[in-house]
Length: 229
Image (cartoon, rainbow, N blue to C red; front, top):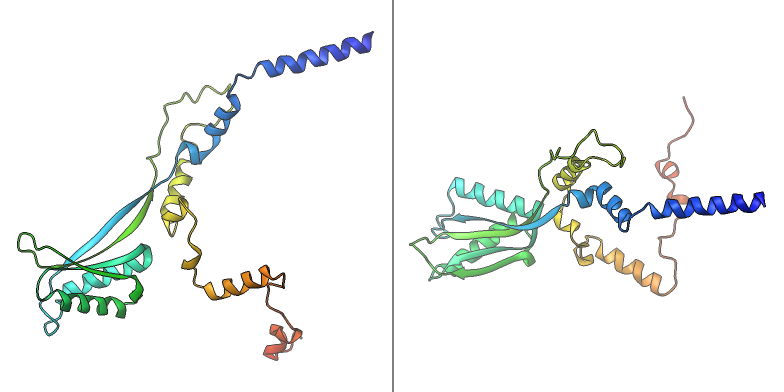
């Protein structure tokens, strides 16, 4: 009889503990302690461009315009997504301008396949060539939300500002903000040939890694003795 009462008391305690949790409490806990949900990082496209005067191949560019073109090319290579556009004003000189800036960008390291060319109507007499590209910016809301009562500790949950600085650091340090929204396309990888080889071996059920021989040892290849003098 005493053993049955003990079992009943234990069962009642479990049921009572379960009834104290309101529906959705677990969801609220996850939302409250997850910095990514409290301080989400948003990624937005940002179009960046420069306008440069062009007076023909013979005259070339002024020194400050050359510096502008160099900066936009470097920024595109570091942070650009997709193509870089060269848009010349409509007219007889448009083809010459497009060819000139396309070649200059190529010599600055921009892949030719990424250079998109075209023309635009002349407005307000502005006959400058526009070079632009799309970059992605990652940011999150400012930190410093101290609206909750720090003396209330019954819930034992972190403050509303928890994890905000970490999210800011991630947004500032990520090399390509678009990676936060979607996976990078495989064809963008520099080792496409090696990847295709490995996948081909995998599909055939073959060994995917390169074979290694004892002669590949660094100590043997170098010919240096491992003895300590």
